[in-house]
Length: 176
Image (cartoon, rainbow, N blue to C red):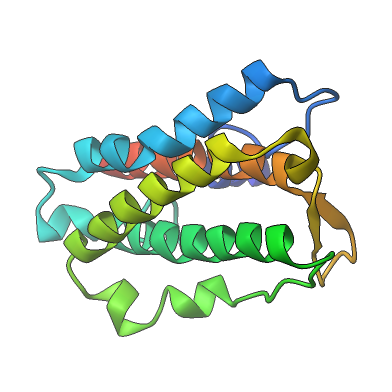
């Protein structure tokens, strides 16, 4: 039972930092981030309000909540990139994603605003990511829970994973 729940929570597995992050891998990750809004839109374009209320696992979020979560999470990540690029090892601000998922703008509102937000945000994010030098990719922020430095190049990978992770949640919820 625990293994089944883990598979529902992490259908593509947990993010693992590769031993080596080269330009090819980084380019693949940036493409995943750039393509995410279109892929998301394609997955949810024809869903009814009833279908948007389907969950990818028991006690999990609805498809609607996942979409709005992606907008919230990706906004936070974009800001973390900017902080790391303009400050020396900033300590990022965490947010209570489970509580945010229960707010009315996430739980009840139409998904179109989140998709529009993601389209504009990812357009800017792609421009920023493609412009980063090797030195800038090594810049980092401090995660307050772990006290660890997280480089921007690792965070690119984490958010490429995040895109695929939540897309799979949506695919799984649609098929439940």
